[in-house]
Each structure stands twice: as C-alpha cells, then as structure tokens.
Length: 411
Image 1 (cartoon, rainbow, N blue to C red):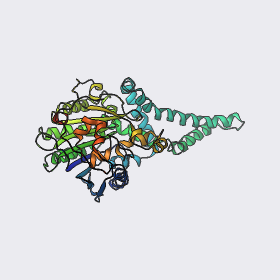
Image 2: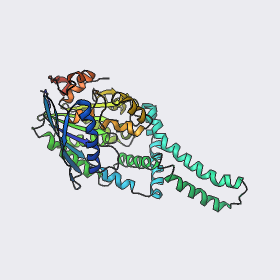
Image 3: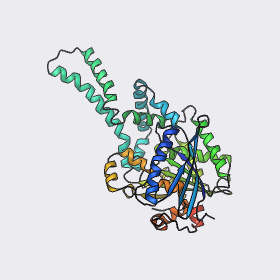
Image 4: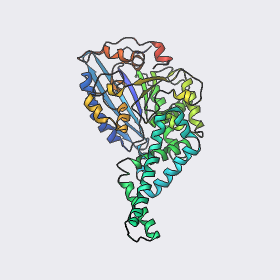
C-alpha cells in the first residue's frame, strides 16, 4: 500500500550531459530549492554533500517541512560528470574530426531518419550542429575569396592556410557562443554509448546498479525514485536493468519504486540500429511488474521526443509503460521568467530539474522533497495542487494501489 504521506524518500538522480561536478550540483540544488520554499510555503534544510570520486556518488540530505508534514530525503547523485569534464578538455584538433565521424555514423546507420520519423523537432535539433559547421566552413572559405576579389594577390597555398586559420578562430567565436563544442562532445559521447566503447562507463553503471539495489532494500524508505534527465534517461534504463539482474525482486518487497524520465534522450540512443542492447534492457524494465515508470515531456523542449511512447517507438510491444504525461513549462514559471527563457532551448530543457515559481503538478522539488507520493501525483495531475493550502499544509489521501504498482497510459 502506498504511503499517505511520504515521510522518508530516496531520490537517485542521473543527470544529463553537463560538465558539472558534485559541488556545483549541490550549489545549484540549494539555489533552486529556495524557489520551492517560496512557491509552496515550505521550509528546508540541506546538508553538505558527501562525495566519493571512487564510487561516482555524491549524497546529501534534505529535511523539508510544512505546517502538518515533514519529509526527509536522501539525495543520491549518480555521477558521471568526470566523463563529461574529460570530453570538454579535448582539443578541437581531436573534437572536430571525431564529431564529424559521429554524425556520419548516425546518418549512414539510418538513426537520423528514425529521428525525423519520430520527431521533426528533434531531427532539426540533430541538424543544428551540422548546419553550424557548414556555416563556419563557409565563412572560412569566404574570407580568402573576398580578399582576392578586392584585388589582394593571395597565392593558393596562403589562401588555404588563411581559410584554416579563420575556421580555427571561428570555433572559439562564434562557435562557443552557439555551443558548437558542447554539441560535438555530446554527440561523440552518444556515439560511444551506442557502441558501448567508452572506457570506464560500464563499471560505473554497475556501481550505480548496486547502489539502487542497496537503497531499494532499505525498508526505512516509503518511496525510492530514480530520476533520469536528458541523456541520463538512457543511462538510467541500463542501471535499472542491471539492478534487476542483481535482484529480480527489485521493487517488490521494499519501498515503492518509481522511475522518472524527463526531457529524455533514450530514443537518441535506442533508435540507432547498433543499440540493440538498450532496446532489450528497456523491454525488460518495462516488463518488470514492480517497477513503475513515468515520463514527462514538454512541447517547448526540443532536446527530447515530444508525444512519443519510447517503448513503442523502439518497435517493442506496448507494455502500457511508461506512463507518458505532457507538461507545460510556461505553467511552472512567472510570465516574465518564461519570456526571458524563451528561445534558450537548453535552459527550458533543464527546467525539469529546477525550481518552480508557480504551483503545478510537475515540480522537481515536490517530487524530490515533498510529502505527496509520486503515485498520487501521476494519478491526480493538476488536482494534486488542490491538496496544498496556501500556508503549505498538505491534505494527504491514500493513492490508488493500481497507479502505484501497475502503471497505465496517461496524456
């Protein structure tokens, strides 16, 4: 039976492709939770992070309170930022050719066509760095051409060197301004993930799986939530599949287990023909009766696949999991804030892990630190907001066991 009020929760977070270490994660968490306090009239205390570079984990505790509720959360950051930071340290001499090869693989394999078939918006996001690269090359070629047209006698070898120099310079500006480096590194990593060729990543996922099994066996928790954002949504699926191999009873005898994917890039990997391993893993997770899974999608988040069932898009039988729910990011933010973020696709994408300025049924910090079980949130959606009074009091009610244990489609 699902707890009426979650008194203790474990929240395991698999973030996206960002070069953010544990301290930075913690600082952002503390900053954003202040929005949660103001929006929901709650008070919180966040402990200092305890970090283990060897295990790839970081932990901190949150004590959140309202007038008639108190929820303790063990926040566990499943870290892979060291891989991203190492990627960002590579030189452009390595980055550009590897990025071109990665894009070529996604095009030749047919993955890009599958993006177009599943989501035109995501396909355009895929094309963006290619269009940017073409533009930088065009600028580099145009400079010596224009100089020769105005009468400067530039020999062909010198013109070639000048074009190369202009291209190298454009990688820093405007390349950095338009996040060209970030996008190349991201797609290089995605290529490595598809082909399971990234050294050290397999061992890290095994470590995450063991941590999930350990937390799931802790009966002091009312609820365990595994949160996967962006590319972390793909890693989350492999983590949970390996945890099921370690413990086939995962989620059966301990706290209620939920997976929550937001702005997910699972299909970015799974639609590649060589990624059969993640399609198999996803099928096993979707089949596990004791593992609940909800996916939140937003139309303004172009870095994900909107209005798609990832399981069905992979060509797998419809398991009625995940529960797919669309959300509106503009209903999470004040109009002025939303207007400021409009057009900043990466900031809108990250809102799934940021604090809300307005009360809305999707609220990262409510799910992480609040008293309502995720089963109730999924079942009631907007009606759940009515359970919170202006002073922050919460009217708990028994969430349907079916919603907690069996899942179901919802749009």
